[in-house]
Length: 67
Image (cartoon, rainbow, N blue to C red):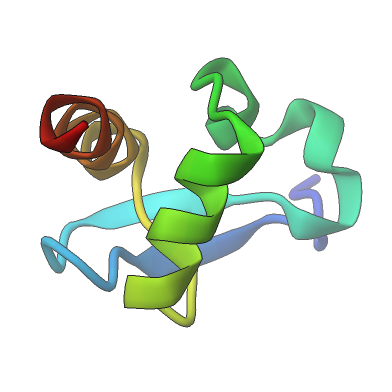
């Protein structure tokens, strides 16, 4: 039985498919990438929807290297 709270999404940044679980965020893959509030704001300023973990890591590095 498939969990209906999981969504197949397309990353807004790289256009690759990934699974998002917004109704149970503790089990969503994005929780594996630690982002400070400042990095979250940086990502949110550029994208209005979820991005995949690979892109989260790239954006985290981009933010940290820009400092």
